Image 1 (tube, rainbow, N blue to C red):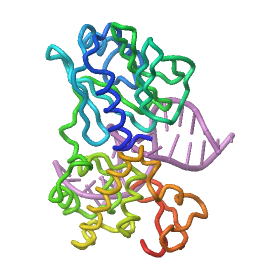
Image 2 (cartoon, rainbow, N blue to C red):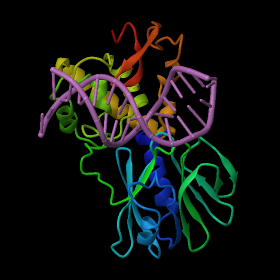
Image 3 (cartoon, chains in turn purple, green, blue):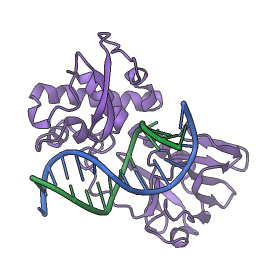
Length: 266
DNA sequence: ACACGTGTTATGCG
DNA sequence: TCGCATAACACGTG
């Protein structure tokens, strides 16, 4: 589910099928997903306008709206996805998880939607409601996007402090877009223990982490999401490292369940 | 019934 | 105030 690759996929869905369509209705009645707005605030701001561009930084998306309208921010949280359903029966589902489909454009876990003049709808489908929709979202505090950051930006993100390297990789203000699964893949690929403090990393460690990050992010975007990452099948009880066969071990690092090779990432 | 979880954020501590 | 750790958030799944 949503880490940077899934969000990029969702952004593409909006870009391909959600732009330039006049908005004639907005369901913003889920007060948790649309916080801190009150019901009707997002609706009032968007009625009559259209989305005209879809952007992404890390796991955050935002859309420009016509006539100098506000930006519409969408965050998929832990379980959100974007679906666009059209009257002709076309339905573009931006994720293959949490189906909940009851009919065309009808989802058990629909939390927010835009209805277009032609009857089509763009929906946020999100069982756990940790996703978020808001006007003019704050994105300034996010670090550089993990898919496009420069080597200098990556080095800077790891250059200070004492946090475990995995916690730093997950820190969206340091680098934007890496989630728990990408982090495990990156650390396994670079052969670095998730609990290693950033101030104990060598220059070579950082170089390997940079290359591993670029590789993991790009392959996950290309192959359809973080579920396709190589380490995923081995993040389970009894799992063994696909490189050397040593047991994969599980613990909590940076507040998240982490798996790593007991030998290569000792 | 109960623990877990691919994300974010408020709170607390040194 | 800063850097970091932890709990809380909501709710479906195993």
